[in-house]
Amino acid sequence: MTTHPDHPLINPHLLAMFMWQGFMEAKPWSEADADIYGGQIGAAVELSDCVTELHQALNARLAEVVMPDFPGVMDYEVSEPFGTWCRQNFHCDPKDRRAEARRLVDEFFDQGQKAR
Image (cartoon, rainbow, N blue to C red; front, side, top):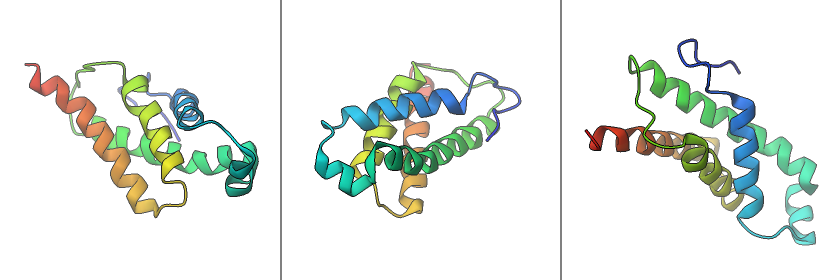
């Protein structure tokens, strides 16, 4: 994964950090979760696929515009909620992950358009 050439502040490592925060705050971690996810390490490895989906959705949206408005704090409004969604839909189809990532990204940038 690389950052968008015109938007170096889109950092996949930062996305991952906020997604993990959302993932872990979705509900308290339990022993049952360890069985479901293969422990926190297993969950983190699986979540890396989700980071890729979100990063690709962001780059796709950023490629569509010359200089997008950042109408809020993206990591709080997109990355963290996507982490929560990934926890609640952990074994979902990858196309559903891509769709949710794109929905959150579009919703974030569209709010900047509505404010104009």
